[in-house]
Length: 280
Image (tube, rainbow, N blue to C red; front, side):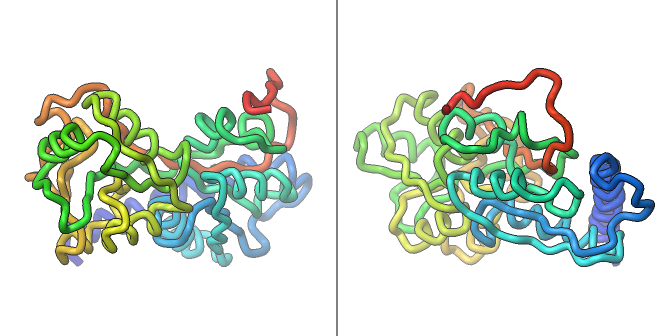
């Protein structure tokens, strides 16, 4: 085992230990006098299609937790409304620590302003822990007439409204990254929402969408030449593609955005300051 895989294994074991402790601690009020947890399978609910960034995070966590806890941890994909369907699923589940929402933080920050729902995460769910962070990559269909982000901006400025970008859904981080990119570069590009990053990427590879802000799931397709890597939607260099230009390299300001993922449980007691959903 090399040093990189050893480091990955240690990180996964540490994540599993932290997650188990956090979930057990958050579940204690609901479990009353139960002295052991878990005693049955745990379900991780994901609000996006399989193969996307959230799904990848959840499956890595599920494998590590299964090994750590000795109980099956199952990923259950419930795509729809940019994660709101999955949030509602967890909000209706028993508050016993066996149904966990794995989602990007947009489910709590952006979604309440975009969708009407019976569940408000800040009121009905309890944040348990941070799960991970991903950079986003600007990837385009192979036939696009651009070699990098700078070329993409020039192409968009020359053809206002003709280019489009695919995202994992309205209000998600890839959507916000696209709008921030448009504001910073002064371009008019059409947004096309999908039910996850995986179907969005599929249409980019098929040439049905021009480009996307990808949360790292396109790596094998970049290496295979099925999509074109134009740059990193961040001010930080990518550890995987250090030669790829960043926003900082190109002078694009106020557009850098990484995706943060977390875990939530159904809230077992009312919040200190109840609030109403902005969308209601």
